[in-house]
Length: 366
Image (cartoon, rainbow, N blue to C red; front, side, top):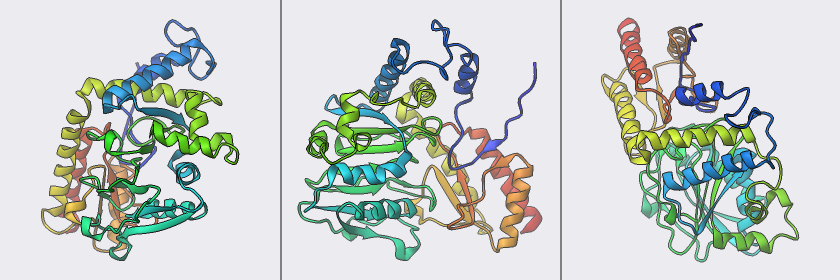
C-alpha cells in the first residue's frame, strides 16, 4: 500500500476536510454503494441523488436545530453571489438596508448592495484596520430597515463576533462563510444565513442558504424582474433542483455533516475549536516575538492572524514553515503577515506542530 503524505493545511479556503470523509469519497469514487454510478456522473434528477440531497438537508437541520419555518437551499456562486442575491431579493426600491462593516468581505457586500438600493453603514471598524468587532453602542440602526447584514467571522482580518448584534424588528442576515457550524448557532435569531461550503462544510462550489419562509414572499414579489437563478423563491419551490446542482459538493458536504454529528455536534466541535485557538494564541502572546493583529476580545477561533517584526523575517517564517510541512500560513495579500486557518477539520496535531515550530523559529531568530 502506498503511503500518502499529507501536510498540515492552514489555508483559508478551500480548506482542510476530515480525512475519514476523503477516504469514504475515495472508496465510493467509481460507484456509489447500491447505485453503481459515480457521484461525478449521477443524474441530479435521479432518486439516488434526491436521497443524497434530502439526507444532507436533514443532517444540517439536526446539527443546527433549524426550525421547520426555515428553508435550506443548496446554491452556487459562493458568498460573493449572495452579496448581490440578498439585496436583490430583500431590498425594496424605497427601502434601506443596514450593513455592519467589519472587514474586507463585509465591504464587498456593501459595494454590491449599493448597486441595488439604499445602504446605511450602521457601524464600521475600518478606521481601526478592522482589528475589532464594534461594541453595541457603536451600532446605529435605521428605523424600519429592510434587514441588517453582518459578517460573523472576518477571514482576512481574524476577528469574530462573540454574540449576535441586537437588530430589533429588522431581519438579521449573516454571512457565516468562515465560521458556519464551528459552534452552536441560534438560527431563530436570524432571518437568513449564508455560507460558502469550502471552509467548514465541504469543497468549493456549494453555498448553503438558510432562509426564513416569510422572507420568500419578498422574492416572490420580485419574480417578474429578478432572473430566476437569482430568486430564492424559485430555488425553494424546486427544492434546490431548479438547475443542475454541484452534485459532488452536495454529496461531500453531506458526509461532513455526518462527521460533525459523530463528533458530538456543534457544542463538541466548538470545544475542540476553542482548545486549538487557545493553544495558538497563548504562543503568540507568550513573549512578544509574535504579535496578534486582532483585538483580544474580537479574536477569531477560525483564522488566527499575527505578524513578526519585518517583511524579511515573515518571508523566512513562511518559507521555513512550508518546508516543515506547515502549508498556507501566508496572510491575505491585502493585509500581509501570517494567518493560520484552523477550521473544524483541522487536526489538533497540526496546531501542536505549528506551536512547536514557532518556538523553534523564535529560538533561532529571536
